[in-house]
Length: 213
Image 1 (cartoon, rainbow, N blue to C red):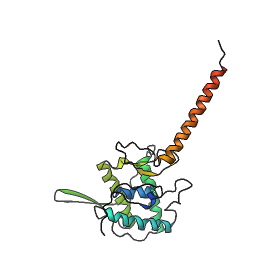
Image 2: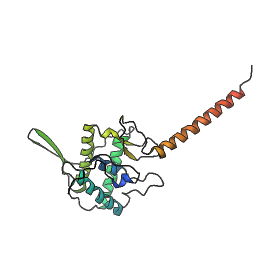
Image 3: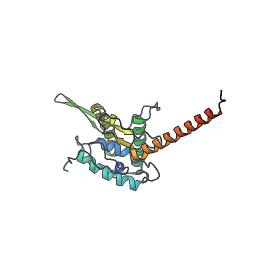
């Protein structure tokens, strides 16, 4: 398959939230995390049924093949319901491991397998599992490679406590906090404005109640 040269692809789960994907293979990680249903206006969880999970898997494996620098993508077998449940578990572990500072557990995958080799003075690490176990291992390795390059810190979850959408921060100083400023950012600003208004009103009432000298 001919590799695409465009730096950002329309990964299907991420595109539902009007976001462009993270660059290269990191977009695959972002897309798995964005298969969630977030908000009443969003489409259903893409991993909720075997049919929708398979449709998502077919689309992302094709995109992954087009940007995969290591030849990890390959052909993956049709999903079973066990595979679907495993993807749900992987999604939860990835999200908690990346974004939940209160989680004390180590989110290490006991089922993921690696193959290490040394040749020409270079150590190569590759996923060694089969089927969708291979896919799970590859995603963890993609996260690890993005961590080494610094890209992983730009893959963020929305600051809104009501939103878990994952976006890639393309701002020069890596300062973005909302997946959508017009939606989550505006909602937060409205809440902050109302809170200030209530505080000022209460403060003003207390001032009026003070006895005059």
